[in-house]
Length: 526
Image 1 (cartoon, rainbow, N blue to C red):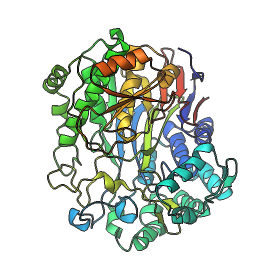
Image 2: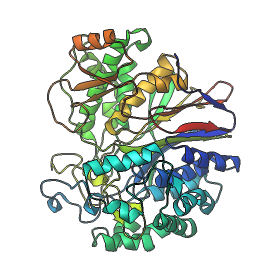
Image 3: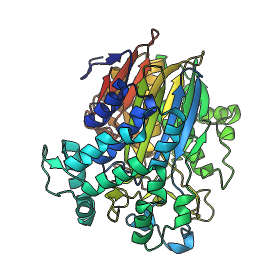
Image 4: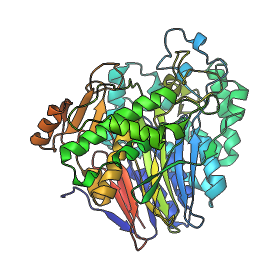
């Protein structure tokens, strides 16, 4: 398969992300002898500065880590809780998309320190230096940065967000972007640690700026949960992913269904069909049970049981698309990246403010955008995801790793893209494991995404939904899918709604990194 980029091979670690300056920050830390988590924190902080529409200090994060010497794997749940007054009665008809009443307690900064406590080796102040530099003295705006501002203003004409961030609405590609309030906040975290965010000036500004919607206890009681990841066997590998309240279970269910088929021997149309049908089953099961496991029982083992996979597989017709699609309504602005170090440790990291620029509300005087993750809750009392104070909403964010039978690392990957994430991650794993592509081929291969209606994932429609496929797939294959009952809509050649980063460990322990030409990022190694 012809690719537009080369695989990046490296022996001593590397990183891949959607923004080149952030990748450079991670590589710099690795060259200084930093661990995979040191480099990842530096990358995370820089990308908040240079890609603020997708993730920020006021957002959340989810990690899957692999520690090579102990062959141990952990999941970090860095989502935030609903504040003390966030009840269904407080909202009435709907949770607003914008403003502080759409936000949870931010979890990203807590996750930096929780991960650093376990695997960090370089002081946090050093790790935040590059982010502070870019915020204080500016970085050149790239195409994606300028487009995000334009796209956001097309949705809402409110310009206050950018004024409070200190960003010129008319910034041109290549012009410097300076964010001095954000630089000051980062300096406070660098010197004062986690408490600077959750109990210091930043916390005080969040409490006073939100008229007490957030209070001292909301922020002080926040924790990053560190858990065993979900895991399943796929072929000869163990796949690790995010446990609830994220929807990593969907990827696991998709894989278990796909494993029942010899997908490498199927026609392209049949392979796509199986993938789409497994996705539909996963979302139906997800909607029935997903919520915060500290508030309700979330029986993932039942969803991933042999009995349920038997049932779901038997329901798939090779000739007819199922019509029982599950309603979907999620944000889509997220950052995914991965980092590995010279010792074989790696992290699959995803962070987000949910919708573009989150709540469109800046914590006063801090330059920090607050997420709008509360909109991921339901107001339906019968839903397992009903909003409650202290509860974490159901999440789309998920990332994966895969290990060999001996427990050594094999694959790390992920993507932004809300409900498209679990669909894309399925395709990546199939491309690598079943179709034997290299990481760059797997990243660039034509992709599909199944939605409820064209161009969005919010409509609650009946029927089989809409199957959007990049038009590099042949018209013959598209016609074969239409004959099965899929409503096929071609996308532009590179128009799929997610941007992938992927890393494979070769048998000689060399790293192979792939990066997606659908975004402006890249991969780099040392």
